[in-house]
Image 1 (cartoon, rainbow, N blue to C red):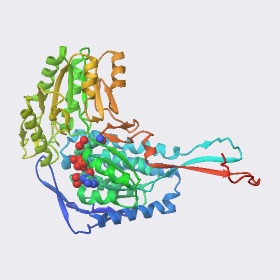
Image 2 (image 1 turned 90 degrees about the vertical axis):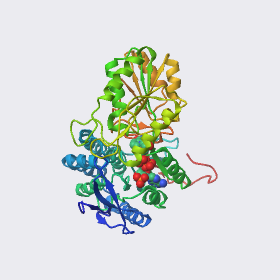
Image 3 (image 1 turned 180 degrees about the horizontal axis):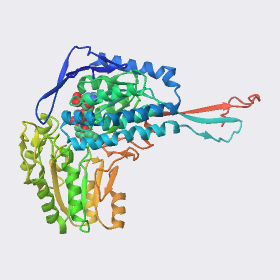
Image 4 (image 1 turned 60 degrees about the vertical axis):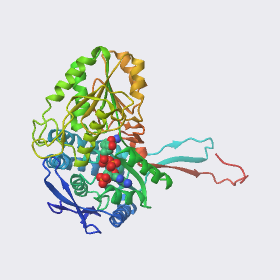
Length: 495
Ligand code: NDP
């Protein structure tokens, strides 16, 4: 890192001071200690970063690098992440307040993103198309797009950045990243590791700063070939409109209000743990949070008892402590937003069964108690809107038909959980739930190998798996006439 307390942009393989000369502070949300100052990026910084990325994209040393070699670089980057995993995990925990043991788990899995796309790099190719005119050869080629912009949120900065960076580089693009203003440090370190791994200077650039300044300037840059964005549905909609008007692509991973459905035949202790994992892990600050629980009326009371009992005993405190189960919310505004929603819920008639209060976690930070709301229904804002915090709404249901209707009655479609021991029902529910990911008897399982897509307002395009490569390449169709015969009729189409 350029300096322990002052972080610059990482552009063209070197540390670059912000054009404005301005910096902003990042605060540890558990202790409110200021961690570092980061460069406040603007359009001039974005200009430099996109130019650096464009230069590499056009450089034959990158453009003509064999795909197998590209794979080697990705593999090396994965190795470097593994070597730096502990430092990166600690840095991320200090920055966003997620539990150190969760971040250690994420960092242990992160190299796999690079290894997976390393293996895929030399399997990207077009097809030969046997058209009816055998004297004309037609083949397709999959080409990289150019400079890809990646805009990421604060809740899992490295993982969410890697979901974009690994496939973008795998396909031969170059990248400019704008991380969330709350979590700049680890993404800067990632770019530095990419350089160390052997990617050319300028293949991976990071401009830190605010969404409305650096983020907007990146989205608006004329040389950008694509934006890959993870964040709120509101910002995603703005980005979709901006990219559509310039006819460039966007991959959008947005919000959620995912249902977690517990049937009467479920293994209840496991289902209760799945409900707790779905909403209280990461203090509910995950897009896939299972924030709406539907429990069959016959097991509603028992499930509620198990979940609220566990919620009441969740250990709140220092996220660096291995025993802590719930850390702070990432910043003050997020804590206030969560508190505001719970108050709103009370006003709408919801009953707070457990939790419902902000706390400083004994450390002076921005914590909020694990909260379970009952006496709620699908018409309430606390049930319809994404809270992005440790707030669960629990509702009873009577029939499978009814719960499918209730679960799908949302503008979101990111994920869903189903708890049942009935195999046929598991398959029926997986087919009928309007969500891009359905988990049965588990929750929050994820792999870079498994494609994921948000339905409805939860997103556009696919991340992970082989499918995401289509999002980072364009398809060219090439026709070659192998015949020397004179063209008899220039006014008819050849095929
Ligand atoms: P935001 O949409 O506010 O921000 C996401 C990123 O976009 C940040 O880097 C932000 O910068 C930037 N940004 C904000 N405004 C603009 C703009 N006008 N132009 C370009 N970039 C902009 O979301 P949050 O950071 O608050 O993240 C939480 C949200 O992300 C939740 O709603 C959650 O559901 C969603 N999310 C979705 C995931 C998924 O995979 N589907 C995963 C994780 C989160 P800045 O930080 O400066 O505002």
